[in-house]
Length: 110
Image (cartoon, rainbow, N blue to C red):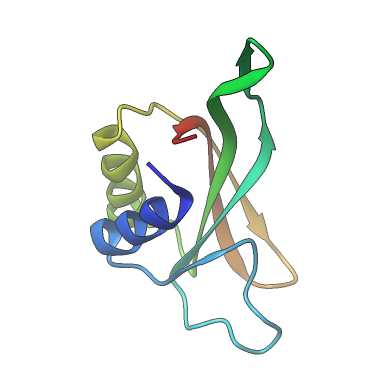
């Protein structure tokens, strides 16, 4: 899988607007939406070549209230990829929205 394919699947399977890393100032859609990004890469090497790219990634789900149905959509998408994420959540007081964070590793094509 490539990062562009991950993006398309995330949008299609959750039905939510999504963007890599951040929305341009003033361009974020109405809630709910997702933001996804690579936290770091942990490539595996052999014979001086990366034979496997492992991306540590986050998906952040933003909503105006705690929404288990939306969370289930994101979790179903990840489970379909064989991923069981670490999940945390918080309320972003100055933005008045809930943030659910999904942390996981994903192998990408070389």
